[in-house]
Image 1 (tube, rainbow, N blue to C red):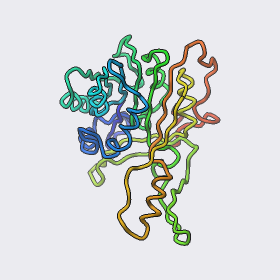
Image 2: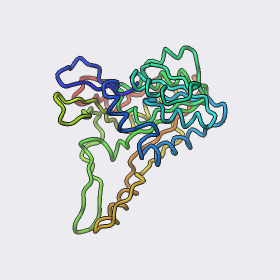
Image 3: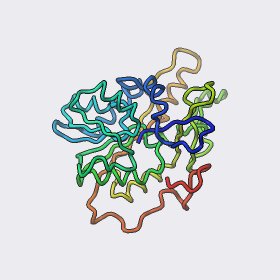
Length: 289
């Protein structure tokens, strides 16, 4: 399911589908992906998926189909699902007709019927979906045994919105990443058109890493790879450039997880809570993250 925006003053509007802000998101990402997609995210996803000709891949929350088109060029049979009709329209317009795009909520993939896939991916979307347990349950049902799910997100430790930031120690001449909060799940608004009247916004949901590990395991998906990717950017020449570049290389921007579907016979009978002590999302009554 793709992230959903709505306007202030309409609390009944859905929270996690970006159909209302598709134009803004398309300008941000474009046909070939943002520079982060092109230099960091997509190369990493492709490496973790290890695609081969004839392989079937499900792209969950596919948006405009950036990953779908890249995988298709490598001979992969790819299907993209998203809940935002406008993003799917853009995906179909820019993609080969043999790529199938289906309107579906990531938490309920019933439109896929009984189809199963060799692998699946969810790229820079899982933090805009709540709750996540139904997402992993739905994907697991549509994976072959031994199939993999690759998830990429902004790093939960170092890139949580409003609670992490860059700082500079003048005495040590060191650039550092400050983390004010981490363990408690919470939601934060993302204003997509600052200054508009009324503001148009969507949501991001912060969760600690343990939430993803437990939620995946509860659905029979065991992590076999974790990667942390820094930004590819470098600073222009200046007195802090060296410190900034060092900090950028040492502090990952993205986190990638690859989880494989195990036999139903070894799935734990007792489900673990996705967050320690049953904590819910701050500001969102008893959300199941």
